[in-house]
Structures are given as structure tokens and as C-alpha cells.
Length: 299
Image (tube, helix red, strand yellow):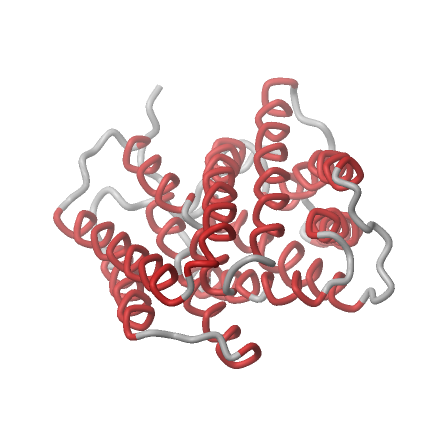
């Protein structure tokens, strides 16, 4: 079950972006669900589980517990993931869709800087420009959120905390992906995260049993089976800097969903911020030494 890092497939980067598109629909589906926000995360993982197992079988990536040290890494990823979902789903109900997705992916910066630390190199001029543009774009969208609607602040803070948990999840997934194939890794992390979310939901006294299964099934298939599978795969073939900045495409997509469905306002700062993130992604994808997934790791 050992995974090897290879040169990315020509369709690998489009797959990464497509996975982010699927994940960007998550906040909308959370709002449509009629159970508690943490319970939504619980059902997202539980419903996805048999599909993840079937995908693992289809790709001939057998699922079983690896050695203890690697299992602990996957367990740590699962705990961070469960805490991320709990905080993020709760925050989604308190802010705009674009905001929730932006702050929920704030851990992408943690992951990007982790990638630079991993290869033991200072960022190049192009990398620095990409990171600066991405940070500027995030700040513009964040500032726009508060100026338009200060009542979003509580949800923004909660989803920001979730984003930091997400950063921890991405780091542990990256560590596990050097030795595990994507589907077994995602299946095990999902299994380990389910009881954590169930305990939090029950402890919070949330409504657990839904009357409408449609949003939950769509959420499980789009975000967990499709989106997370492509993300975990991409972490094994792209450096963290590329994956981290690619995650920032989600807020722009989620903001458009919020605009079309809920009439949530998009300011000029939102558009400029989204454009800055897009330019950052183009810069970081240009051929450059030090960005290959095969870069040597510290011993």
C-alpha cells in the first residue's frame, strides 16, 4: 500500500481544479440540510464510506490498517478533519457562502508555507509574488465581508478556526500520502473522523435524523467522494504550494453560488480579490525549479 510520487498526469491539474469546484458547493448543501451543522458532517462521511470503499476496490488500492506509526498519522489527520468540519459547518450558517469557503480554506496558506519549509528553500521571486497576490486577494475578500455586513464576523471567525484545523489535516494527509495510496488514506481518515463528529453532534444536542436525505447524499457524493478524493490524490502528485493556492479557487466559486441563489452581494473588492488569487495560481503553475512533487524531503 506504499504510494510513490510520480510526474503529474497531464489531466492532474484540471482534476485538482475540478475537485475544488465540487468542494465549493459544500456550504450551499450544508444550508439545505435539515439536521444540525455537525450532524451534516457526520452524514457526509457516513454516506460516503461505502462509495469510497468501492472506489478503492475499483482502483485496486486495498484498504487495511498500515503499521502503527502510519495509522497514528492518519488518525491525527482524521481528528483535525473532524474538528474542521464541525467548526466550518456551524460557521456556514452564520456568514456568506463565499466567506465561509474563503476562511474555511485559510489553512491553504499554512499548507503552502509548510511546502516551502519541506523543501528547505526560501520562496523564489515568482513564488513570493504568487503568495503575496493570494494573500492580498484573501485580505480584500475578508475586508469586503466585514465592511458589507459586520454580523458575518462571528461566522467568519468560526470558519477561520476551521481553516486552521484544515491546514493541520492537509499536512498530515501530505505526510501519509508518501506511503499510502489516495483511496485507502481517504477511507481510513473518513472512518476515524465519523465517531468524533457523532460525539460532538450528540453532545451539542443537535437534530441528528434528517427528513430530507437529498442534500446529504449530494453533499457526500460531491464533496467527500468526488472532491476530497481528487484533493487527496493531488496532494500526492503536486507540491503543497500548488495545492494550497488551488484551494483558494473555492471561495470565488462559492461566492458566485451565493450570488445566484441567495442574492449575496459581491463587491468590487470581492472581484479584485478573486482575480488576484487566479493570477497567483497561474504564477505558481509556471514551470520552475523547486515546485516538482519529486523534490527531495528532509531526512
